[in-house]
Image (cartoon, rainbow over all chains, first blue to last red):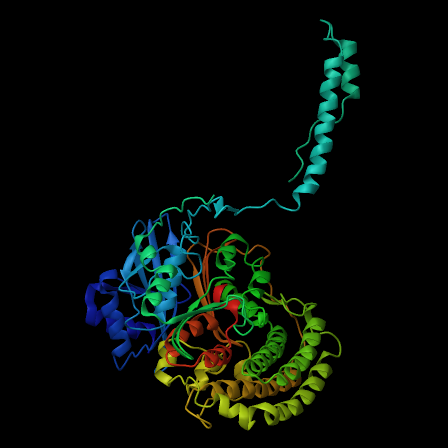
Length: 215
Length: 395
């Protein structure tokens, strides 16, 4: 079935809970209301015309501008050989949606991954815990406003760039030159009211004006 | 001197932490074994919490994440072209496919058509890589169940492919060969002859390999009927690639959702039949991989015969930019099955979100279910037969 036909058959059954097809993108998708998600998916799996027997991919995208998190479900049917994409838009402050583990078993690990990396809670998941990161990690790294903690168990999470040394050599030369100049300025007598001779002499000796080195 | 631990952000996380699992197991009086994270037969850094009653496992819980390098986050930080070397690290044994998945996803966003010669170069590189990846898989699987001899035999052949790929792109493991819109280098002079010489040699070796190990009575008895995955279960858990085909599902992305030049090539999709034991058992998964190597040889011969002359790079803008929110999805048949990239474009030169869906990740998800009631020694064979690669799970 084409995506249009799938959308029509869903809209006929679920009405407002299913949004219109969004064909503007490369792959058309529809929006589903979070409350109706489990029902819609159970229908997608069991309906003999649709028979989406596999949840291929589950990803979440953080949109701070719209204050939303979108959960994207990529479905595929090995029986009918057609694909479809659902999206659920959740509130960013407390993203909660029903788990699809009872419908497709592959949702188990895929949901755990999104829970770990984006902090989306899947209600009804039998074993919702972090999968990639340690249990006591702070924050969800794939959120756009994620700020890494400076330490994890007293292990620093940042390190100096090995290239810093090269920059510092230049910096050292620059600083030494600046210091020399300063000392010279100190050693030189304070400029007399008509500063013509003294100023030009120090001006000629002084190194080239400071340049910001590209770092 | 330990710092007080911060309270976890989410209270449910504390309830189902790994420690809680350990405590629950301890209450039952069963033995608890930690298999891994550093274990020679787990194919990388994976931990299995094995709850056993004697030799029989009640459950093996996979704990992954030791190799999590946040490749998806890196994808949001660098340009579309700049992400290509990082995709090599998604699956280092079959890096060419990760390259191709990324290139195809961005090409779909761009709407660029890749020149024919570049497509042939890609397929030649990918099929060589598929053979080398499957050689590692079948070799280590034989070694994991106790037959050490086939492993060096498989690795010896893999060396030839490494040399071929090195000549093509300069690297033996992390190739970074594909570019968005084409390939980095054209085939070197005399490359076609070298590939054909290798294929001639390798097809003979495959016969020998089958005689030595695939149809070896001891090996067959060890694996036949072990951890069979029925067809419906394989689909439900979203197994892909050789693991799915071993369960009797006739599906190959190259055939069913054809991309690149695969529609122009003749090859068959080997499917498990349960000849030696149950359908979808460990031996089926092994033999499907061996047969796939033969099919790859067929594809290589056709590619070498058909490859046209011409450009190897399409016209691609130097700075790739899209409107924010544009998204694309690509599916390719990697050595470990259906590899998928989901890319959401950002406003600038970076992607907004990159999601890599790999075959090993979902294959790991099924181990908890399959391991119940198996012997501990069979767990090793099960992991090997699913051909999981640790960095591909964690990304």
